[in-house]
Amino acid sequence: MAGVVFAYIYENLPFYKFTGKKALIISGYRLHHSLYGLLLILITVLNIFPASNSILFSAGIGIIFEHYLTGGGLDFVTKEK
Image 1 (cartoon, one colour):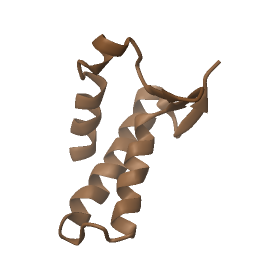
Image 2: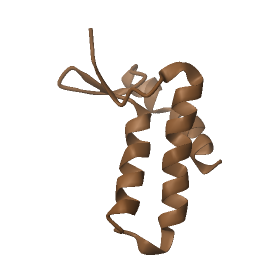
Image 3: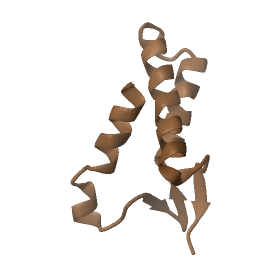
């Protein structure tokens, strides 16, 4: 549930009003928000914040799941056209 809430907030941030972009693009590659979910899971595997591992892991799974359900698939990084 935390991942879905995070993804909803991410999709509706005023950041897009300032940049005009829907996703973070670095050197011609679009970083989808499912990549952030993968990073949260990696943080739990590396045990960087042991007290919050279960929260971070569930948020990471939720973000990836929400991205998949909303039509983004399992894309983490794609090349811009």
